[in-house]
Amino acid sequence: MSSRDRSHTAFARAKELIPGGVNSPARAFGGVGGEPIFFESALGQRLTDIDGHVYLDYIGSWGPMILGHRHPRVVAAIAEMLGKGTSYGAPTEAESHLAELIIAAVPSIEKVRMVSSGTEAAMSAVRLARGFTGRDKIVKFAGNYHGHVDSLLVAAGSSAATLGVPNSPGITAGTAADTIVLEYNDVEGLEALFKTRGLDIAALLMEPVVGNMGLVTPSREFLAAARKLTLAHGSLLVFDEVMTGFRLSLGGAQQILGVTPDLTTLGKIVGGGLPLGAYGGRRDVMDHVLPAGKVFQAGTLSGNPLAVAAGTATLEELRDNPPYERLERHGARLEEGFREAAARAGVPAWVARVGSMMTMFFQKGPEVIPVTGWKTASLSDTARYADFFWKMIDRGIYLPCSQYEALFFSAAHTDADIEATIAAAAESLAGR
Ligand SMILES: *Cc1c(COP(=O)(O)O)cnc(C)c1O
Image 1 (cartoon, rainbow, N blue to C red):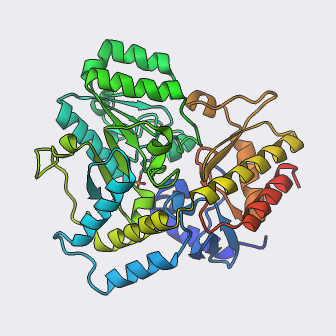
Image 2: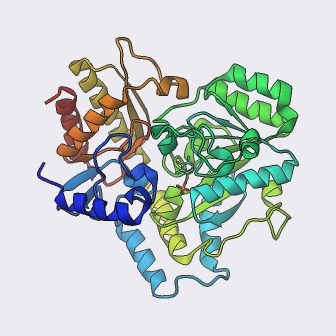
């Protein structure tokens, strides 16, 4: 592909003005080397960079764009709201309408509070769990990312994993001490912890299907243990569905897994590409949130009209024209294509997928090791992933810029797009 001169110049300028030149570290290409690509516009399944190159988009803004970019229904809803007002600091009926859609879709949610990001949703859910139970300890899993909340930025995945900063400077030892980190899918570790400290634990937070150390699926036994142990000890089970919510099904991961958490956090798709998050769950727990209860949580732009309009249009489109069968069909084909291409090229790789989320973990071989948690994910051959990433960029395929991020595709991707992507992967893996 021809040069990216404008991106190069834009990045040099941005680095002088913005730390690292980006407003979120996952964009900086730290995991693949080289310089980030700056974008001009997007439509459907395609991104256009400022040098005029067009890419098939496999990050979808890291999750939100399940309908593709500038979906007509979403654009129309934003435009309509724009003509009325963009923020009042007072309630609107639109918020209740979106709340109804969320409650109807997500099995465990009886009441929901809107915030402005997934981070805020996780932070608020932790405070609520502590306020509700009167306990301090939080349990999370290595490689699970719940936003940049102090108490949850311990052994976090995502850019934290890519950049190798499991504990950020600025998080006090006291804060980190209230967070207990276990290995994902480790049933024995979970049982042992609850046996000794179960009555100190306010909440167990987990990604019910992990996207933030690459895609990792939970075992049936692990999910069952998480539900049973929290129930038995009066701790709350919190599913972080910021990534999986409305993506794996309209009701999220909890619907396809058949496990009902006490609280759920949402973000990404719920805002339809604008900043919106939410947390919700059991009515008796949610009624502890101020002003119904005493647990403080607030936001000047919470339930922002534009974000609510985009989220509402997105959820209504997903409800009216569910893309999930199509996404599954495309996902199955992509998974098969990538796996076959790796095998043919003699590249050891573990390919994991649920619906429209997928990761190909490059490994050092010779035998392929199943990836079940951070211990196995972290064995990945990240240099080989970086090489693959750049070869795919050269072929107009924009994958996540880190081995430890899942790829996402949208309902706008066509059969031909999927086949073109598989062909590009086959060439890239064969080293051409
Ligand atoms: C993206 C993400 C978050 C954080 O959401 P932001 O909107 O980036 O703050 C939290 N949890 C999970 C599982 C995520 O994927």
